[in-house]
Length: 496
Image (cartoon, rainbow, N blue to C red; front, side):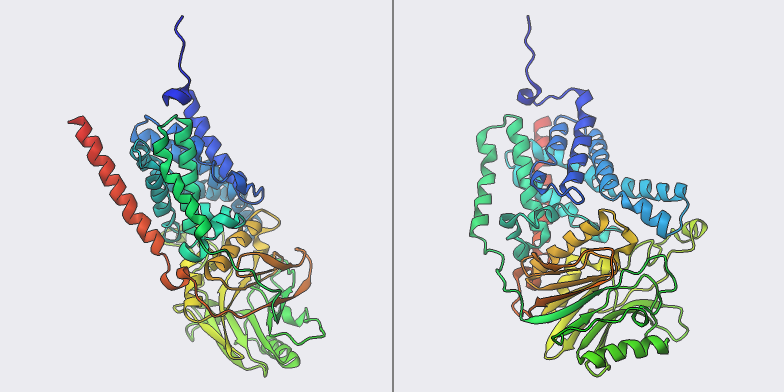
């Protein structure tokens, strides 16, 4: 009787197992992030997909990767349907089509990764090469229309891996997690032990500086959470309807979040008087969201953050640079298509410069809502002198879905990368104060009007990532190109 070898030992998997393996990786990636948050699975989430790639053609590898990506992005970002249907007033069929279109496009990254990773997995240097390829491709997401979760975000609460954030940014954390995934996949294939030797480099994590240990903070901020219904268009002047409560101590800063409806500071006299009065009454700095215009014809609106001084005077204004596609603007060439589906898509124009606002001898860097996903963009505020970061957001559009938990996780990585306190004021939640190590030091319950009174500090030192930006990403691009060239060269030599 002939005894069949185990697929683990031979590396040859039955065809029927390939698609389920890809689906398994997509599912595990969903479980890694909120709402589940099983981050301990991040080092093995991609192992099933890597196992499925063995011996497959480039086309089948792409298909398997794309399948995993569809499951991942469709499962993690399921909330897109609700946002478009409930708040964007897109018909159910149209909202479903937008969700499907979204994950079909986003999954292309995983498809390309799987296609290119096949030859690299056969080499003894597969662990660093596959990790570099993953990181190089992941770093292109911010330039590909819409970016959200990176693999490295799963390590925000994995303190040993998170030590890399101030050095390499979140992409360095992605690199380490992908090394672990590749190592496990090679071990399951019974590869020679010396092929696993690159994993020894992970011991260097113990030599990286620990994330900073901080005190509760000597400064005080008031973070207002008005809990205004995102569908309530009458909330254009929210400060006239919800007054800042008193407190025993005058704060250093009062924060009002991004509004669900436009607040026209420059055109609405009642609203302007209301916010100026708040600043004067408390004798402090007030930072709030407003709509400004770039042109006198009022055809180019800007989503802005305005800082008022203790006397109610305007100190600075930052205009949001990174707008939400299909929310605040419609990318070309989808304009006419979207107009047929809904009239709710915004028509904002992007700002053109990073503004670091002076406040009482210190400096504040403010980014608005979705901009938290752009690590290099947030970094520029700190590189420009910001001693504290502020994120004004309206996550009310997400309802009570996992989106706002995912958004908070991403924002916490920005604090880690730049070693800055992050004051995050939101309309409905999740309003939080985050220390320079990415730890949440103060919070209030979501979905109710409240105000968070919490401590923070101004910090002046700059991290390696703040100073040098995405240097690690560029390194992985060069490394992955070299690895792909070498793999192709050896493959060609083997054929001849």
